[in-house]
Amino acid sequence: MNFLPLIESKREGRTLSPKQIQDLVHEFTAGTIPDYQLAAFLMAVFFRGLTTEETTVLTLAMRDSGDVLKFPKDPRPLVDKHSTGGVGDKVSLPLAPLLACLGFRVPMISGRGLGITGGTLDKLDSIPGFQTLLPAGRITEIVQEVGCVICGQTDRMVPADKKLYALRDVTGTVPSIPLIVASILSKKLAESLDALVLDVKFGCAAFMQTKAEARKLAKAMVALGNECGVNTRAILTDMNTPLGRAAGNWLEVKESVACLERRTGVPPVPRADDLRELVRTFAAHLLVQTGKAKSLAAAHKQTEDCLNSGAPRRKWDEMIVAQGANLDAFNQKLARAHTAPVVRELKADKLGRVSKCDARLIGEVIRDLGAGRLTKESAINYDVGVDQLAKPGEPVKAGATLVRIHAANRAQGDAACARLTAAFAVSVRPPQTPPLISEVITL
Ligand code: URA
Image 1 (cartoon, rainbow, N blue to C red):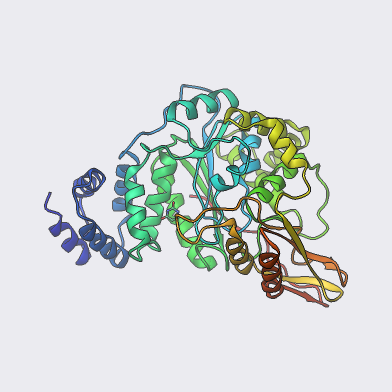
Image 2 (cartoon, rainbow, N blue to C red; image 1 turned 30 degrees about the vertical axis):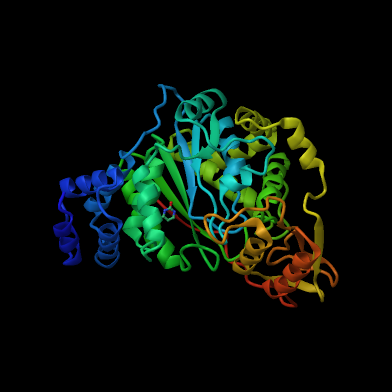
């Protein structure tokens, strides 16, 4: 294939034909297009964009570049949630077993973290024995038997995205809406879903920093998901404050289990139980999207009753055992007060209300403690991170804990504690806390 005319066409802002795009995906997956030409093409797309039709063709061609999961006929709809990522975002962990208990099948193919954004697979790797890499046959088997699985993409799924994403990462072409849409949806479409809900985050620790950018991405993904036959909704959520009260791999697993064990209570401040609120909201939307509930209010009641029944907590154990976890070792680890060698506390210096809990700075500090990766090759320390985060709006007394730091050694714990001082503010007047959920985007 002579790829040069295609690069030139896109450089001039012309529309490519479906055949040109399909050939392009086929060739670069086979490795016959040199990286320098593909990089030039990506930069042309970055500046010129793609039409909706071009994006659809690209997404489907990427999906079909490898294996697509196949499931037997079953009355339980196939559903999933995707998040654009943030600090403390562990929603997938309690959500998958909850959805399985609500009568869904959940083939949740997840990713690893990079930078300040945590990755679901890294969190699960902190569970003794848990296997995140499973062959396609085992993924479908666990989904059919247990109802949910959370694992990584197999080597043979969406190879076109692996190649393209690696090149985008080093050529400054990641922040292109059509390329992001194609990348995310090609992977989700390879799960053969009936319905998908997208958590598109905005704020200082999100991929999309402003609500307007997040809305643009969400609308493009909702349009394309539906165009490709998957009932897709997006929810815009705030990522200026970490989600939940813990960030760091094992600490987030612990918080997820606690979320499945907790009974409902009225949160003392609006954002106090934001993790549970998001888990319930995504489940409720999927119930409505698949016609399993008549209204969002009825769906919320169904999810709350299900959580309170304790069944999703038992389903969690079933899922992790199916994925190789050693349940005794897991329970012993859960019972430990902390697994990192050093624990420090940052205290409030005055009485008032928490007015700042900066997700970006907290994300940077926990990444530097070893919870995240600076490069794709970095090793992770699963035990470090923060917990007991005080949330915006909450009343605190002088000397109360604002955050607890779990570190590998004393020097790192002290350094993190000093840096985190700037992540918090306490004010006398009650602050304005923005809503967790700001918009729902449907077709
Ligand atoms: N996540 C993805 O999977 N792909 C992108 O392009 C951006 C975020």
